Image (cartoon, rainbow, N blue to C red; front, side, top):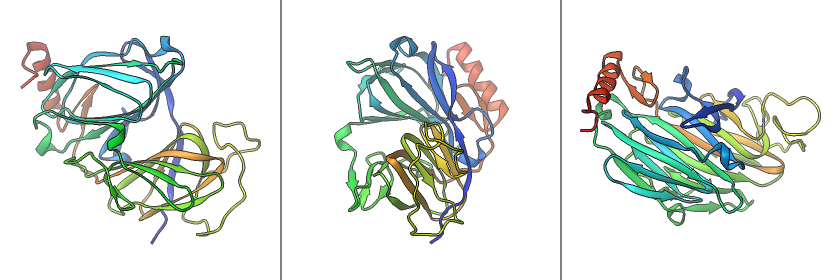
Length: 305
């Protein structure tokens, strides 16, 4: 077994999307080859309703899958095919846009006005770019959760882990999407198949994602709140706190040392598609000609098949 080295740790950057929703973007709209088959990860987390209630009005998608995971509040959604629904806390929607769909997503806060969730975009290979759109709406109770002897807890949204298989199925990139909690002070290694690209996104607590050069199985004293927190001193290169994105190199497991408050993070991996990407806004194709055709169809009303 080999621990994956860390390629880099970065912070999610503030941005505005939709009709004025303030969020943090972990990656996207740049060079995303290191994340292939994933294209974008947004963290929409806010306690001020004025910063999110305008939502994401009607917009198109083609050639990708969008994965929405809600932790607080809810997201009302509707589309051009007549589908309507609401995603609540702990629930997931895995939408395969395929050949094209028009939809809207309107966030609403919990009783305290808090809203928190993530949206991940996954690319589709050329053979499935124009597949029929479909939804997989997953209730919170359908997502298996497993707790290890040391208190480490994992929700398995997609893929298989520790003997549990997530409810999302039939996804081209064969991804694994996990919500991981490691208790304070614990050192854990977690398997990740060596054929996949992988990243972690921290959204509670902090810790140290130990590089391949660190001794395996050795507990190290670390009580800071990590990058982005209030701990004193300079952060070590492998420390990650709230809104930190950790990109891993190749290997077949990752190692994380939780800090004093524990650490909760998304651990996402997928098999690279390794195809050309032509991308403009919410549409992702393989060639510029395909991209131009998609926008021409939007203009002339033939986008929806």
